[in-house]
Amino acid sequence: MTEIKNEIEFKVAVDRIEELLPQTWGDDVPEDSPAKIELALLSGLVADYEDKYVHIEPPTLLDIIKLRMYEMGLNRKSLASLLGTTDNSVDNIISGKKEPSLSLARTISQKLNIAPEVVLGV
Image 1 (cartoon, helix red, strand yellow):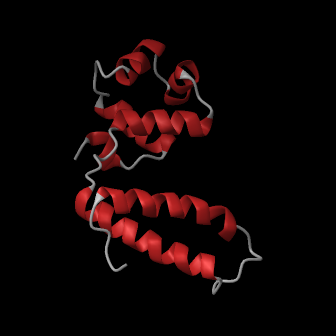
Image 2: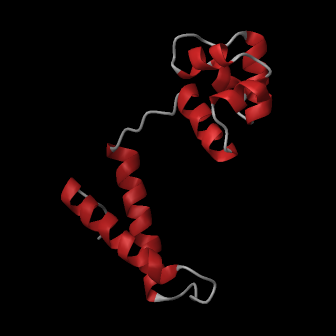
């Protein structure tokens, strides 16, 4: 197969990748094993198909903040404390009711390690 042409072929390829993944984990599996070679080929075909046909929206600031909260083990109250702001301010941002002020946007960028252009939406 040189190209995935439709959703059925895409689904079959993704299912096969899921079967191959456990077989290719670990340092003891040689790079030239048939499973690793097949996985690399299918992964490339799936990536090409997704690039061409699957539109994925970029994450929003809210999505990224929630991910960082999860990664850092933060709840809204601890996020407010980390950012040096009020619970109410964090609630408004998390709920999408308000955009962060420039000062708070800078703090979010620094404390949560989110690129400034993402925080500012540019």
